[in-house]
Amino acid sequence: MNIEVMSMLSRFLCIFLVSSQFCGSSKAKKDIFILAGQSNMAGRGNVKEGKFDSNVPPECKPNPSILRLTANLRWEEAREPLHADIDVSKTCGIGPGLAFANEVVRIKGGRGCGYGNVVGLVPCAVGGTKIEQWSKGSHLYNELVKRAMNSVNGDGSIRALLWYQGESDTVREEDAVAYKHKMESFIMDIRSDLHLPSLLIIQVALASGEGKFIEKVRHAQLGITLPNVKCVDAKGLRLKDDKLHLTTMSEVHLGIRLAHAYLNFTPHHFNHTIVI
Image 1 (tube, rainbow, N blue to C red):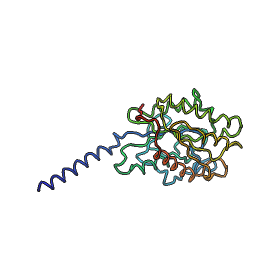
Image 2 (cartoon, rainbow, N blue to C red):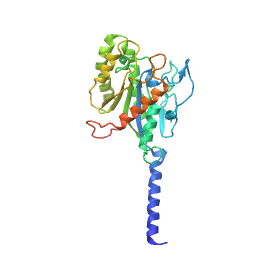
Image 3 (cartoon, helix red, strand yellow):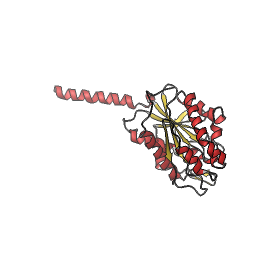
């Protein structure tokens, strides 16, 4: 065997060994995303007559590179419904979370060796909740902080909080008017308590609401100008017959939009990634 052939074989062997180590799931770091808000984040897709029909779109299928944090704070392979053990008072179905994660993994090359991390989803959404129920010190706020802190144990970084909430704040005008201030306070508080002052927040502007002040809440959502806050507009996505919840495919499309918002984001005032 001549020297040139031996040199080529050595190079290929080195590439193989490095790739194998990089792709090893046991050493993979987690890119963690918090899912919070109310029912359209928890997901009501494919829920019919109070039951989840178990039909899962291809965009929401399980993937070994995508995990979820259970109510008992254990990591497991993510499967629909993501919020089944979190939003327990209602039947959960398809939400945007898995479509989001699958799109992130697909674009970053999760099926090959182009993306060595895994995506960790932290479901926290609860249906029918108003923004004031997420204020600092509330049960929902404390649960979110607890779950987020437990999600990072030296092998993960919180990359973003995905937020879809506000439908319950469209009933009373005073709630709609106060929404912007309360949402900004929530953002600043959660960043402070997670020790992530530049945490990316991707919020969804409403597609529907329980009351008549939808546009007032949307105006508040679209008007937030804090650094590292992005808004994905859900207006125009198809709704179920209840005129409140997104259809299954609308949830899928929203998840993909959220993924692109994350992947195309250029941070402001980010000096480095903070790992809790």
